[in-house]
Length: 347
Image (tube, one colour):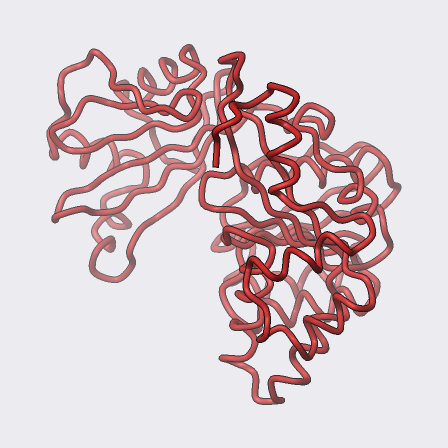
């Protein structure tokens, strides 16, 4: 959590809430800018100096952590909060030697699955008794919000134990039917893999992992699934094909047991893969997600296990179309356009 928010930062966050912005940008020699309905808007404030941005960042994370950026690490992400106003994630990095800040604002409450129209097949998979559920999309596509909405759906509909290993914690999940234990990497566990192992020792039914960094992380998730746990993870990828490809690449680069074994194991644990993309609503009232969902059947599992290299993102669409309970994101975009929810010329 941020150590201290400067008055300038609090003012920008409050303005973002009033504008219904999703993101806030602090760049040297630019006024504070906001993303509203997918469009960038500059504030009427004077441009910020690099020194002013550095001071905002130092107050938020401390001078010692700030000094590591650009030398030991590329960026630092930390949760921020103004009680009763907004929660979010602040990313602090460098550009041309100067500090830059970006804040992604999160709803104070986890959105209901009906409000963001999450496909029924994905919710059905989430209420299963085991399986790896992968949420994918580009950075800023809303996949994190979707993951938490699905977790909240489980929380409201299943008597179970939910554990998370998060880097950082994005939302506080309040127990409903489920009991909930949230762990933050760097505070409650030194890394994701050890956090997963620790969580498994407390016998969860559902495990939430927000950041996979290594094959060890993924295999820890696989062990959880194979022991009867539903595992929710997210992957930055523009398509279902690319999400699966990134998981295959992760394990094959770091697994000594052989590509075939790794792929077969991965194919056996996946119960659903989703991808999403946000589009401005024609009503002007924010953005809406289009979803693609893969619920793998026997043929799709075979394709992942032994035939994946023959596919491209485009040709893999046929596998998605022919898998029961699945839908392509292209088809969902067309549906939203026909309903006049989004413009017909979006891509």
